[in-house]
Image 1 (cartoon, one colour):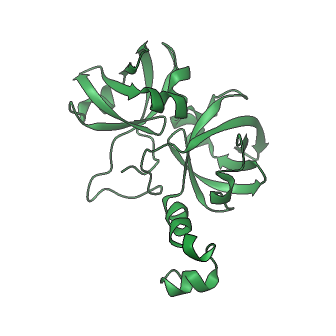
Image 2 (image 1 turned 180 degrees about the vertical axis):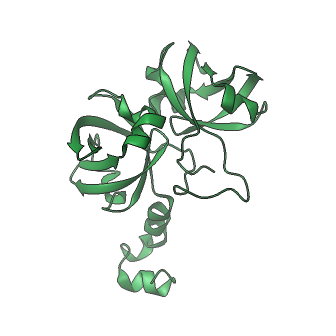
Length: 210
């Protein structure tokens, strides 16, 4: 379990493709608290560390993970957002993130918004659009963000200068596909309401959400 609060930007130094890809990431701060067999979120995808030393770690990724995420597009020199797992007693500063990527969203453009920036993104289809609501949470490349607007296949999020500086979101070019994980609560609410055709106000009240 993660929170979407990035703790370090790592640098990919080696990517060995194959049926079980191996990814070497230089990240001394993350490595200091990581053990072999431990989990780490790389651009929002939960991976298992199979080697750890003072300078970084090696993680393995299945073909399914590479196909669903942007990890297969990385190369030596790529910078990635990293987060260590949430521990009991840690502050929940973002929102609950599983590290299970649902799909990818393409960065269409970045617009100035005062001192901040607004990122406009597009989904490949409408499958995940129903989980995105204004003022709701979403994880993009592992970063916990708030949806500003959503409509059709497009939605927007805002990033303040601090977020731009401590994550990769401030440097990604238009066309980059970001790993997207929808809000955990939205996913389960839909599942709970499936038998009655969806979630409405009466359903939320019945189950204690209102």
